[in-house]
Each structure stands twice: as C-alpha cells, then as structure tokens.
Length: 330
Image 1: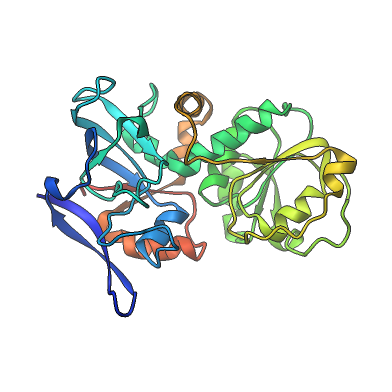
Image 2: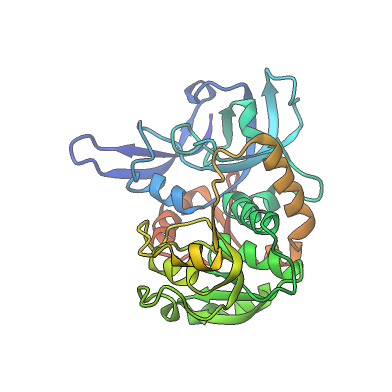
C-alpha cells in the first residue's frame, strides 16, 4: 500500500472532495512503466482537477497530478529499465489518466522522457509543465527570429509559474525582460529573476481602444490571454511574435486583425500536452542548460500531498508565486 491524493465526487450534489488515502498497486490504471514517484508540482489544471474538475476529469475516484518525476520500478518497454530517472508531463496524465499525486504511477512509455543531465527530480518538478511550456514559448520566439538586442521582451503573468521560468530563461539568455504583474509585492522577486521593467497589470488590462499603439515589444510570452493579449498585440514591434501559453485572463480575444496585417505580428500557439517526443527532449535539454538553477531554487515553495487541496484552491485564485514542489513521500 502507498499514499495518493484521491478525489471523489458525490453523484447527487456533484461536489468533489480530496484527501490522502492508502491505495494498492492493482488499483492503478494499466501502463507499460511503473514509476516510484519522488516529486510532483501544482499547475492551474491541477487546481481544476483537485477541485471542480473543469470538465477535465471524466471518472471518479481520481488521482490528479499532471506532472511527476521519479525512478522506474518496472517496465515492459525496452526504452526504460528499473533505476532509470524519468519525467512525465502532458498527455492528459492527471486528467483522463491517474497522475503524479501518488507514490507510484503506471503510465505508457511514450509519455515519459529521460531526466536530462544537469537536473535532479526535485528540480525537474520545480520546472514541471509550467517551465516546460515556458521553454517551448521561448524556443518558438527564437525560431521566429527573436535575438537579444532587438528590444524588451514582455512576459505577462510574470510572477506565476510559466512567467517566472520564462523570465529567468530570457534574462539568462541576454534579453531585456519586462514583466507584467498585478501584485506589487512581487516586484523584488521579479527583479531577482531578471526583470528590468515591471509593468502594472492595470496598464494593459483595458480593452483595445486603438488597434495599433507605439511599437514597444520585440517579443512576448503571454500567460494571460483575454483583453491583455489583445492589447499587447497592438504594441508589438514590426514582425515580432507573441507566444500564447495561457488564458488566466479569459479565453475570448477582443482584438482586430490590424496588427497582423499592418505590422506582420505573429501569434504563436504553444501546446505542451501533445508535443512530440523529439521536441520534448530538445526542450528539456535547453532547460538544463539555459535555466539558472539558483533562480529556479528561488521560485520553489515546498509542499506535501496533504497540502494539495488548499494549494489547488490557491492556484485557481492566482495566489501562488513561483513553483510549488510536492514531495509525495514527505
């Protein structure tokens, strides 16, 4: 028997509840690889899966946790052997399939990547889906021509999980980083990560009044979406790109096509869930080389399985700073 965070739902009221319970190996879903989980983390989707479900969880009882890192215990796939260190993000693990808020997990071999050299399992979960997505966003901007010296790069939601990692990576690569936040108390934290200009959320939260404004940003990693993304599109430099990674500010985009037609602005969609294996490995290697470990350590908030119900509620309210690392064995 081992510990897991199990979410149940009352079929009459449809209300969910989450608690740490003891489960057995035969309760886990089928998989080709059994992993002794060491660490997990907390993402926005995890908050939904722990709490209201958000349409992501189809069957209860359920074990959430869309990310985990640990050691292979058993494998029917030749790519992985007992003792191998592995990372899992995406593939709807923790949503449609039981996830990493457990001391053991069964998954398909295709859903895993080897832990890259230079990272341990704790650091990998400080990165997690949020940091992996941030790296994909930076890579997409680079692939579309972004280079240091072209001007400031804007990061919205800069104090959140994606924003924190994107900021640290961009600053380490030599970019001038402007960070948007609605929490003035995070200014010192953002400055330590490498932000050289803090932009108040209210400055960008108004609905677009003019389709084009002054050309301010050479690139953007946007974790907010909604009205803020629409506003930012009109402030991009000619030919610049925006990597869209989130919708904390809403899924609707009240924008015009003018920035695309008159400034050649590129809006790049970043999906971390279904990324092909080769690009996953490329991104994780870049994380190991381009994300300063001291900056990563400064983002970490340690937690245990029993903390997750509260942390899930907190992340849905935008109250998490940096990255939560869950020691599932604590």
